[in-house]
Length: 276
Ligand code: ADP
Image 1 (cartoon, protein in one colour):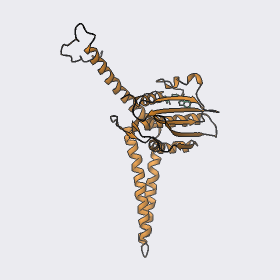
Image 2 (cartoon, rainbow, N blue to C red):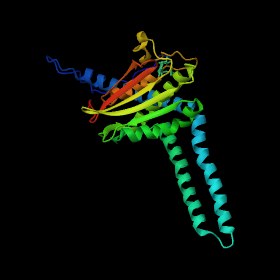
Image 3 (cartoon, rainbow, N blue to C red):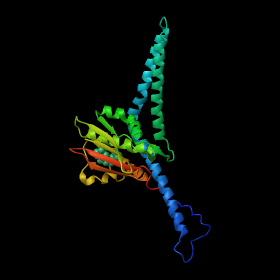
Image 4 (cartoon, rainbow, N blue to C red):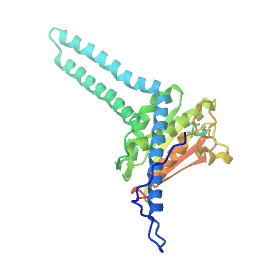
């Protein structure tokens, strides 16, 4: 059955006669834009959940590691308390480690929940370096399992940017996972990923550089098209969604070839959102 578009409420008003103002068209355009925004947000969410699915092993590890730490510190604590005389100082230190590890595990869970939930955009002042570090912590296992050596160069005194933190994490995570896949596909022992931030004239820039299989120069723009993928089982949505997120922040995202091989993905974001 064909879906019916609900009629636009105009109370019969069809625009002013003999003027160029056509309010019904404006209302329609407004509604179309709202619908488009909703669709984009929904797509961004689906694509985010897909990335999380790819990271399941990493995330389980990030939570299990501190949990194992908690168990062994608790054992140690019991041991020091049972000693004659009890070694309260060492027991206290073991409890300190338990608190630290529990916080680590709960931080990872909170980050995953934030990425997975479908929340409205939240524009806040964001420190891009902090966002990069939080995102890397979700992918460390992915990198180590694939023998990728990661180098970060985060510039000091970066201006804060007005952004949705979760969407930025999504873009960075996407670039990291893509780089990781390009590196493993290169079938080379030397797998290097570098992430660097820099201050720009009116904002920040982030560069993700890998030494992977690289991109055919003819395809350097095509990779941003929706459904373009060269991976078996790939969706081809990651870069399209990432670009729309960065543009929604008033910035730009593009790709360049790396030297001597691999790819560079770079985005810039003005410190004050460019489009409103
Ligand atoms: P997917 O990862 O599902 O294929 P993306 O939109 O994230 O979707 O990427 C589209 C395509 O761009 C990939 O299939 C790949 O061919 C290419 N690509 C993305 N990142 C890189 C990279 N770092 N190195 C080489 N090719 C890349």
